[in-house]
Amino acid sequence: MKYVLTTLSPVHIGSGDQISNWSYTFDNGKIKIYNFEKVVRALKNNPQRLLNLTAIIERNPLTKNLGDILKDFKLSIEPTYISELKGSVKTGRNEYKQIWEFIRENSQVYIPGTEIKGAIRTALFYKILKDKFNEDEKIKNQFLNEYKNCLNVKHFRDERDKKKQIKKNFSYLEQRWESIVFRAGFQKVFDKDFKFADAKKDILKILLISDSNLKNPNDILNIKDITALGVSRHFEELHELLKSGSNFIVDLRVPFNSEYKKIFPETFIYLGMKKIREACSEFALNVIESDIEYFNKTKEIKEDQKSKILEKLEKRKNLAKISPEKKYIILRLGKHQGFLSTTINLLVKEFNPELYSEAYGYLVHRGYPDFPNKSRKLTIDNELLGWCVLTQKK
Image (tube, rainbow, N blue to C red):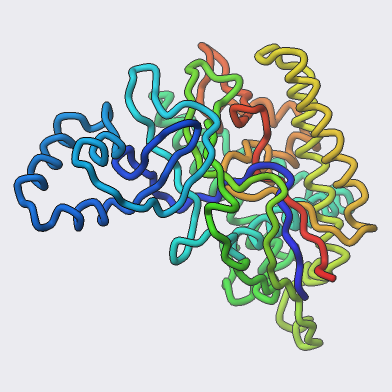
């Protein structure tokens, strides 16, 4: 079935690479992105100028950019694409910033199906566990005990080594319970020898989601600074972002086969579209409620900015509430989703807030002296990142 994915806020899905200052120019609020290989090819018949180019880059790795080269060498090269900029291309040390690149294929922007599937998986993980905990007290207590045991690290004297081991423990815990939920079923909860089940039995293997259609970056991207609230060191990083209101087409299907009931665990029943919509709605509501709580308390932004953020969050909350009946799927994709988007931590905060508070300091970066960050990432124009909605294509 075809769905339209619409971004409700800026979204960054990274390629893992950064665009260097030697691949862009900046002028009048626009950043032009170039293929640096074209610059080199334009100079291939002039070895001396190539040597000069190398020398300039080596002497000024961050204090000059490609615009200086194009001007000094009088080169006329067409950019690959052009984006609007909101933010600063330079740091406080007057050095050009690198830009976190959005994922693409053949120079075109798209949303990977794996990214959408991962967001649905997170919501299902949350929903399935929460339903089971409300139904079975013993399983809930087993989960909370295992969570608490992750903190029992006594043989490390160095606080950094202790924190590293605790993070490993929590990573193992999440993998174990993911395997129970998606591959083995809850009968394995009290099996002391159980570790991880065969990935071939994962119920999400039958959730089929295509990559989206490709889009021209000129039409769909802009570049903004992203900053963090609630951290001791202020910083701003440039990211390529999908604009709010961008649309993509994806194919999403759950082909039914009666034989699946014999192959997959009992959690297979959550793979109906109705259940998926409900899970995504419930998970989104909890994340949004946490954001509302944070922004109501924070004093790091002005009241008028805060009120605009809270207004957007309330609208998003209302959309999440009605999404199951409207047959919408609300999701959060990409980078900068925050600590609470990690399913097990959101659950523990609901079922045992004291235990959550005890673990929190070990699982996030330290902020101001003696307490960890309770931060949120915002674009320079005060937008939270990652929210989108899937609607059936008419």
